[in-house]
Amino acid sequence: MSEGWKREQEKQQQKTRAGRVFERYVQPCLAELLGSTLFIFAGCVSVVSNAGVPGTMQPALAHGLALAIVIAVFGEISGGHFNPAVSVCVYLTGGMELILLLPYVLAQMFGGMIGAGLVISPSIEYNNVSGAAFSAVKSTEDIGAVTVSEVVMTLFLTMVVSMAAVNGKTRSQFAPFCIGLTVTANILAGGMISGACMNPARAFGPAVVASYWDYHWVYWVGPLAGAMLTVSIVRFLLGDEKTRIIMK
Image (tube, rainbow, N blue to C red; front, side, top):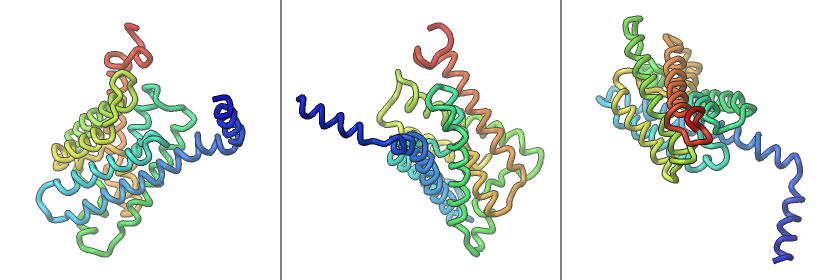
């Protein structure tokens, strides 16, 4: 046992400071960049290829399955956020360091642009869906319904993330499946109302690539408001003793 312990100590000592910094700060951001790219690419392709087809089954399954896969693959490295609203929620519920919050959000937004850029096509379908950008708001009359829809769906998503992946009392090994299934359910339920974005990076990438900015702000305000509602519920009511700020 002593020899094994010594070997383990030697291995630990061989890790350089640069290596520790890379694994703690750089690698998670790279995982968020790559995961966001793959997830948003799959989502945008599904929307473009589904152009003109009634219903939202294909985008719902593509987004949900792609998200579940990238969370399962990259979750142990970065936590598997791939969504600025999720990162804000996870930070405010005690699941990540402040120093990583802005780099995560930037990585997710760049990943969104890369993923959407890979979908660029001269096809009629691409133009018909504005490059998979969110275009549910046609006039100011639609803003209320779309925003509320995004708030509620993001509340649902971030609540599942918080309770299944962050909160110690309820953490589950099936978190990737639960999160992906939540996205699928939300798109099936609200896709025809708001597009079921729930993710500012998913909205930002196609907006940049397709230069479609009409009412883009709705897809930041709605998801972030939903995330803040989740933070309030977890911090005051449903969080474990470490997370909850009252009645400890």
